[in-house]
Length: 497
Image 1: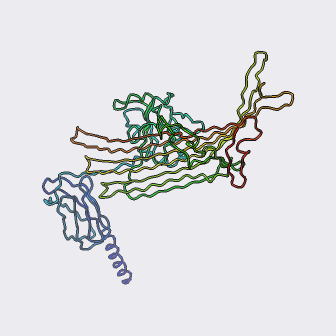
Image 2 (image 1 turned 45 degrees about the vertical axis):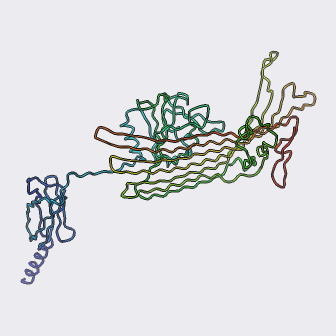
Image 3 (image 1 turned 30 degrees about the vertical axis):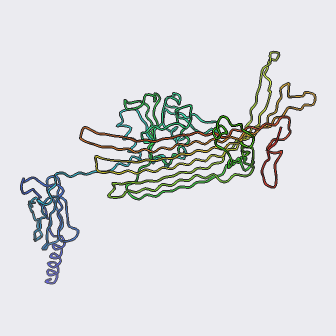
């Protein structure tokens, strides 16, 4: 019986040692007597600590009985250190901290940078905007299969796309108004159009993966130009990330159309981008030697794989004050189409229309798109910021159209023999569009109510169409692409009519 009592006493003693007591109290400012919120209260035994609440109180539970050092610290106050004894009962301490003259601060500034490429940031910006606007976030652009800004912008409500002859999106139609009623910005700066006749910018020249976000303004504010009656499209390019970030992507594919037929192109290496007039002046008499034969030197073969790739690398240096980002995009695609065009007319003596001709067309098109983007920004402090942005866009389109036209009209069709007049023709066309923009911008907050912004901008845009060559053959039974084919080399020679 005595052994059982002794064992019970020993177990009770150890259980009390394990459970221990609770250390609690209040942290106050010794000078003012006000509670201190956020003070760190730690014991010398690892794992036992707390932070004072709004009323300055703290509580550390289940402290084993024993002797400890307590440390209480807070910014701009001297650290409080004292030896305490914790038993099996609650221990209450009221701790007063004294100010540390060496650590006195006039103010504490907490700053953070918002990632504007997220969906939440895009929706918040839309809600707080002074005018009606829509934003496609950077995260949505990454998930989107669209290769160009023209295809991307059609995902915004109230916007439709005007397509070119190849079926690709090219111009944006905002709120049902023609493309001439809107203009395009890059990082808030208006850029010129590569077309020398019109001021609206083709959006298919811009790769979508270089964008940090896409902003579409559907109403005007006083700080916008008056020629944007329909709206404004602002392409905000990628910013330097807060830490080192490297990304790359590569995709490929093959056009099924060219499994059944060859891709036909022409020689663009020896093409001359300047006319004899531009080279030698208006007194020069041009000869045949001044016009290279590349536009009529055709090659027929199976095309290479379509290739789409991009990369970006960025980082910030010098305590996040200086940021750099470099990005690039390259796209090379092979396209084609087969189509039939019927022409008809109605004669006065007949009640129905008559088909007059049939045109069988085969298109072969190679499109290359290159985009380069570089941006540097320097934050002197919260009130002064500088950034330098550079972008280069290049879109080259090589198209060859082979047409076989059958004439059923009275002049080209013999009803006795049943023969129809045949015309074979090819058209080779090269179009190159380029846009370059360099922008140096500064933002300076001089006072709480006065802010200054300035920009120095250089932009250039060109649209070159050095060759648009057509070759026609009348009364031949074979097309120009089949007549003079050199089977050994796969090249075509120039034909006469």
